[in-house]
Image (cartoon, rainbow, N blue to C red):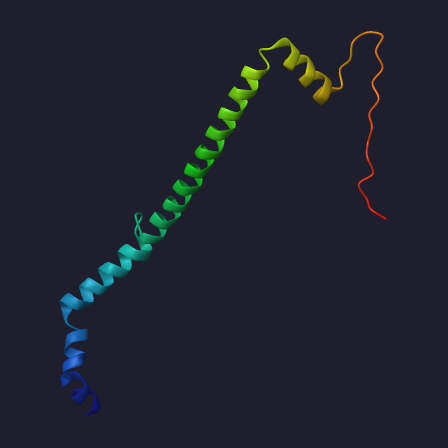
Length: 105
């Protein structure tokens, strides 16, 4: 008797209407289980954002490196760079590296 009352209730009729059941199952399938689901699209969008950030980072690095290469075309700049970065020296020349103590007592 209770089931018959429940079955005749208007909300029950709406919820278990065949079209509503099909629509809800379709939406659930498309959101979670399909190959092109919402979750998959979210992952791809996140990956696209990361790749765009990488592109921007590397483009700025390329610009900086091009500036550095342009600077190193000058022989004096090239010599300065080699001395500072690679501790290169001329023959019969001594190099003294002075390190400052940055710890304050």
